[in-house]
Image (cartoon, rainbow, N blue to C red):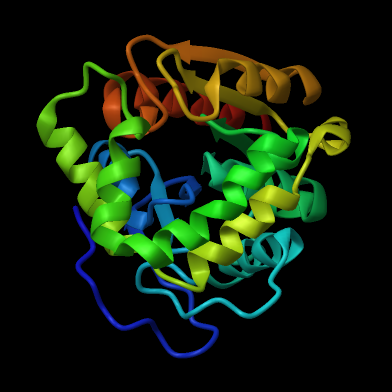
Length: 270
């Protein structure tokens, strides 16, 4: 499913796709994506779970971002989605890439709203490395200069493995083109550039699964290992042949791990 370009919602409105029934999984997308990126999970898992997938503030069909929104603000916005759409939870939260950064802050800031945490192809934030932080901040200028079409065409192919089929590459590029806009993308990039979750990971007291494509060229295996190593008792799994968007490139394996993990947590703690 690809979001077509639309005017943003009225101030403060966050768009949420709501699919399926069962234990609720809130899905938080990456910095170049939208709720549409979770179509493989909605299509395959709707018989087992209720899948809530947001368009983050400033993305897709959600309202434009507020000036100065920080990581706490994004986490609080996700908490508000849980309060509004899932009666205050607790829910399982899946965060991909930038969405994983938000998910970790959500878990430490609003732990009562979460039953478990799944972080996929994510990182501790770009502030762990000054060069990464500088490159992240440059993205907004690149988007402004190049426009959505050229920006997505340049960045999109890196989000999947070199062996990804052309139709997947095209879908990822189109999804990025239609999801991102200024100032939302610039604010998300600034938050990533300013974030280092290293000291925060030990505060996460939830069942946690960390997934990473073994062909991830963006955040990479080392960052996922750092997340798993820092979160007490986290389980770490690599997905063979998948790039940064493992949930889209290897949906069968990704969904199998997600389904098994959430089901086990439900049996133990639900």
